[in-house]
Image (cartoon, rainbow, N blue to C red; front, top):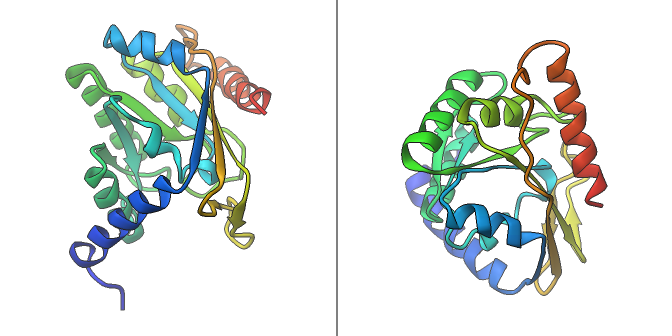
Length: 208
């Protein structure tokens, strides 16, 4: 039987903070993001699910809303993210996904928040972009910022669908921000949506 979130999330949050303090971070391409944020212009950060773990440690002053699954495990994640100062919209590709994205878009516009989407989550296929980030960016009228995180030493969960990477204590973490870009005005129409999906996928791969 799983422990309730109120018991398990506070120690998880503390562990995450301590864990990330052991990592050595290096950032590339952050300047363009900071310029946009100084003007309080929302962005949608797009990354692979397996590279998520260290990202929130480099959030700093950015105010972010992210979509989190409605599952029980998603409740644990939502509590931890909220403890880190993030906002959450609950839903997934299988349950309430569009509703959650619409909620996140409204929050971005009304509260001047950035969005964050793991573009191949929550179930994959691994490293194949889904439409969520494109939908969110289009609805919020915000540019997309592709992000990759490269960790020098990791524990890879090989049986997980995404081969999730946990950086080992003391690892180097290189965070690479791609150039912000806007989707086309008709980004959500077919066949343009597929073009936009492939475009984001190519930009993420190019950061390698």
